[in-house]
Amino acid sequence: MTAPPAAVTAAIALVPPAVGGGVDLLTGSAHAWGLALGAVLAALWATAFAAAHGGVSWVIPLPPLVVFAVTAVGSLLFADASPLRGEPLTTAAARWAVHSFPVMVAAQCAALAVLVLRAIRTPGGGGHGHA
Image (cartoon, rainbow, N blue to C red; front, top):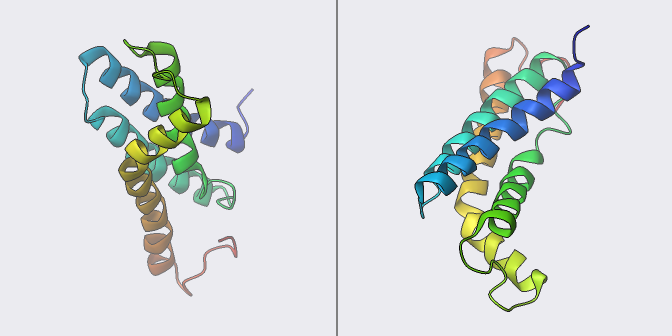
């Protein structure tokens, strides 16, 4: 039995950033290069996979959400110091969003680049009518 394309796409979108974030935590990397690399590769791969199976509409908004989720979970579960620093969860979430914003942008641009390249390479520029 094979997994449906949506489940495979979701796994592709989630696993590389989680692994990259884990590498960052294990190595003590303050720059989150593992998360960034994982998020960009996941965005490229998931968008290309979804486009090949005719369903990118739900994949396009995923990269920033996945990056934020990995950042938040990593900070809450594995931070050396108190991840909330005595502040409300909403304040900590805003800090995590600001710190991970460059990674979110890079991953989102990678996903959009796949769509642009696909539109350029497809005769007629449209593919199967899915955006």
